[in-house]
Length: 553
Image 1 (tube, helix red, strand yellow):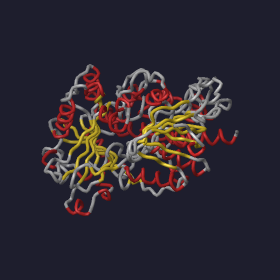
Image 2: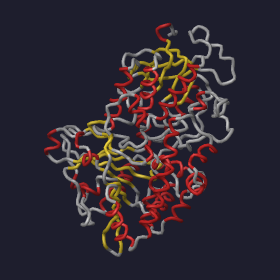
Image 3: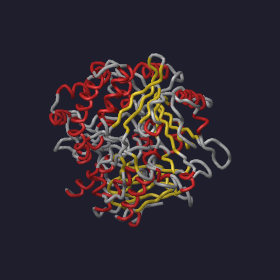
Image 4: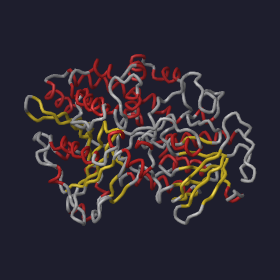
């Protein structure tokens, strides 16, 4: 159908994930006419809650599950009614030393207790002191870098000046992360615990010369200037509900069940003469969609189109070559338990151990071995993973009967599980069995004995592989960051896709790190320069770019 006055918007947003909702809320509050088109029957993308098991009233954060990078400024600006609760226990890592089960406990509220745990594990204070120095440095970097994520994109040189610590810059931005980990720590387990933040959803290793591990690590330690990973009270669905409410209250229009099928927009440097017969004006973009609920197709025109989908998806919508496919590298497992399992380390309280990040098979050498096996196309023999129990911090996701029964939720996030391993239909079962075997190895009882059962008598356990994430929520290759993360700066004088640079002479989209090679189309999802995680930052930055352009028209 042709566009007409009623189907022309200031901004059309492709994808109703959390970043798209952030952009919609900012733009609608500024008086822009905004339309959000979402393929699924609900908004939120990966930031959703679901009752995954029939007859069990537990609203699980099905995909994303913790929040660190959502700036408080966005929460304040949009008036979000949202509580993020800090976890007292940062992590617990079980290990066997000298034939005895033990573990490393990091208590965020009691440094003295953490020091004693380091001393008991390693026999002295060296590793504890190194831990303090290392995270003091990352904390200082976080305080200086995080505020820049919601500012115009700095150049590499500008960010280095802002950090003002040449040693930290070299360690985190220029040399493979493994170098500073090995200089700083001697204990294999401590090295592994540090490295895990560099491997979340990222198939890489400590000495990868591409520095993928450094980029992943950086985003996992800078959130809100502290690096804390907090529990969203009410689950991830509460985050999406707050954002959708803010967007709707501001006047944005949201259409679910609407699959975008194509985007038409002029490339940078072309005449931009519009599209005869469609109503697309000079410099405008056009979005075609399919109404999945009612049937039929439609087209809308907009001054700007913001894409809250992966760059590979955008390329297909534009009719371009998407290039090499991204590849996710994780196994996500959701469980509901009748009770928490007992641990082989009898000195550890399960209610503490599972409240923070519970590391499994994540020693430094274990991580390297698992990566090497997966890189060779083999399922890791001892898959590394990390677990946490949401309900120990926030029981509000359980209904009254589930609370009465004492149910607990458990989330397992497996590392080094690249999409390439799941071509065989039986691969998922092998990955799940191997991952649970590593968990069982540190428990005093099998995890299967602790699982609740649903209304049909089946164990409350579900798993998602990278190919399933692609099918369910449109992540190419199951890549949770849409593509490899980028450092939060622009290389000095390096042009963006639209041909401009990030400095004062560049386009607004380039200045905010959201440019594509179509001036009328901006990225507002995790594939933007400062994307990744449940942050809202790309949505904020795309909205700022649109409003900056509008102010100068």
